[in-house]
Image 1 (cartoon, rainbow, N blue to C red):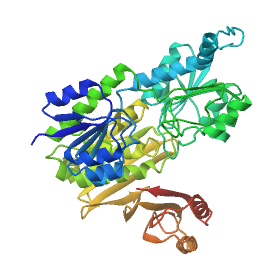
Image 2 (tube, helix red, strand yellow; image 1 turned 30 degrees about the vertical axis):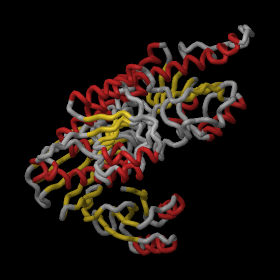
Image 3 (cartoon, helix red, strand yellow; image 1 turned 180 degrees about the vertical axis):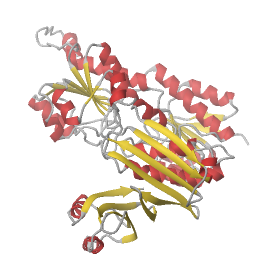
Image 4 (cartoon, rainbow, N blue to C red; image 1 turned 135 degrees about the vertical axis):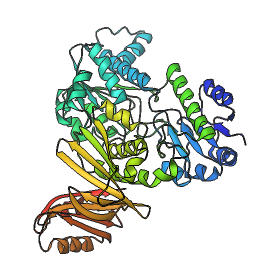
Length: 525
C-alpha cells in the first residue's frame, strides 16, 4: 500500500519532488484550522511541518495511521513528543540544515545594534537627516559573549573572530581544547556578563537555561551592553530587559524570538533601542531548501524501509536488530539520564563499557542513546542521532569498550563520566526485560528507575534512614521504592529513593541539612 504524507506548512517544492520520486503520495494543504487538520489527518502515514502546525495530542490521537512527524527545522515546540511516543509515532527534525542562516542573522543583528540601522533608516526616510544623533560603535576589539557554543554558537564565534572581536563563551559542555580550536576563551557566566560588550544567546530552552539572563544576571552585565537573542524565547526575562533598556544599563537589544509567538504585542515593543524580527533565523532560500530536502528524505526512508534518522524519540535501529536491542536501548537511555543529572558541567569525557552478552550486539545505537541521555539535562533538543556531533562540537571525548565475559550479570552497561568535579561511574543491567541500576560510585545496589527519584550520598551512620523517612512523611512525599548501597559499615553510602512526587527545592534543601548527608539530588526519568 502506498504511503501518504501531508505537508501542512509552507515547504520548498523540492520536498514534494523528493517524496514523489521515492514513490510516496504527497498532499500539500497549508493554513488548515485545527478542526480541518483533525478531520483529515487519519488518512496519512506521515505529517511534514515547520512551526505553524501544532501537532498536539489531539492531532496525534486523530492520526490513526500516523507513523512519522517530520519537522523541517530544529525546534519541535509545536510537536507533543510524549504523546507521539505513546502513540508509536516517530518524531524527526533536521538539526543542522539552518545553522549558518541562523548564525548569520545573529551577526546581522549585532551590526544593526552597533550602528542603530533601523532607527537611522526610519529617521532618514522621514526626511530628518539626524546625522549627529546616530553615533555607533565599532565591532573591532569589542568583546562578544556567546552563551551556548554548540553548532550555531560556534559559527557565530567564528564570524566574530573574522570581525576581530574578542570572543568569550559560556557553555558547560565546551572543553578547553575545543575552546582553543574555536579561538574563544571559555569563561563562567558571571565573568562573561561582566566582560561582554555584546551578548549573543545560542542555547536551547531548558529548565536550566530558562531566564539565563534574569534580572539578577542583567544587573551583573557591563553598563552599555547590547544583547541579541536568535535562539529561543524565554532565555531572557523580557520584563527585566525592558527595565534595563529604559534605565540605559542595556543600551540596545535585538530579538528574533519571543516567549509568546506570534508576538503581536510584547513588553519590549516600543523601546527606542530595541530591534525585533519575526523569527527569521532560518528564513533564507538556502536554509529552507536544505531542511525541506532533509525532512523529505528522512520521512521517505522511514516509511519505505524503516530506517530512522534524526529522531527525537526513537533510536536508529534496523528491523533485524530492534528486538535484541530494545531493552538495552531503554537501559542506555535511563542510565545516561541518571549520569547527566549527576554532573553540573565541565564535561570532558564519557566512556561506555559493555560487558557480557550485550557486548556481542551492535552497541553504536546504545552509545548514542546513552550520550543523548547524558546531554539532555542541558540540551533539551538533543537526540541519539545528533548527540555524537554535539559532543564532538564541544570537545567531549566519547569512547567504547567491550568485555564479553561477565562475572556477575549476563549483561552489564557502565557509563564513566569525567567532568570538572572528577570522575563518576554508573552501571546497570536488564532484569526480566526492565532496566535496573546496579552500581553507583563503586557501590552495589539493585534499584529500578522511577519517574521521580531522590539520590542521597551520606555517611553510613545510625538514624539516617529514620530521619529521611520522617522528613518525607512530614512533607507528604510518599516513598515507592528504597534502595541502599555502601562501601563498608560506617563508610560512604548511597540511598536511592523512588517517590510518587518530586521533592520541591525547599524539601531538597531540608534533606541536604540532615546529619551525615554529603550530597542530595532530585532526579527525573
